[in-house]
Image (cartoon, helix red, strand yellow):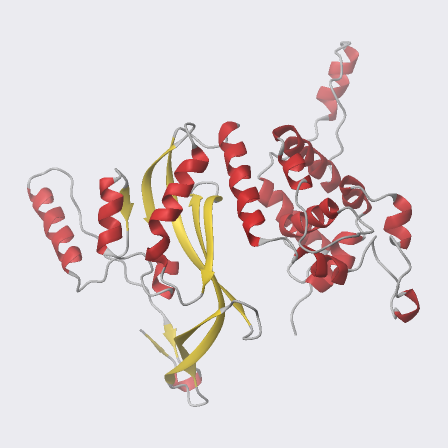
Length: 354
């Protein structure tokens, strides 16, 4: 059975994602300042709601909240709740790291401070926006809306509109000086699995390792349905700069140039990409997604340094090591290193270390 998240966990998620500097308590210093007649610039709460208020004000100052307010759903004529509130609710779900939609009423919708920040009043938080379906409800209502209402509405945002909003937010952050003048980026493909019923999804056959009752390791073929999300993100802060959603069977190298050009366009004159890294774990899972000579040559012509993993038996690996050893012999600081990791295989008496 899946472990339930707690309120403390999701608050810690928000704090770690925002990377806010934590406040410290110094009553002696405060008393001394008051005694000396110094003016108090402001009083701030140290609970999660106060932290969330500051972040919301920051986004409002940048113009991100105004941008989110312009998002409209496809095919919706009449709503009881302004659609921007659905957007902000899902925004908070991501920020708090709530994993299950069914946990939203307990972990988020009942948080009166967060709901007031979005625009719900105290009566709506306690009693709900409306009483529709109340006679069929087995449990008491938590929050202004139910989790199902959020799910049914948030999926009605057109994909093209999501891309436009995403790119405009990155441009706002670049203009605000969030990124340094020269940056290194990582390209990371991630599978988004769905069921076969999902409209527009792709299908790919993957080989997975399984362990039988005797501890023997076998490889089996499985079909995976879904999409692939490719993201270019700023490495130190993990902030995305460009993204592309395609069918799961499509190869990432086809979209490498498009992603890099989009990232450069979003950064504008404020930052330049100098190095591109291909995430090792993601590349290994996706069949060395971006290890295509033509695309790597294009990166080189654009002036990017690039870093990719290579197998031991590949010519490029042998050339790189021989070059490093040659530089080392000349006393110029070259080196070759090897890392060996021990992995447990099998179970019980059949377990061994490889």
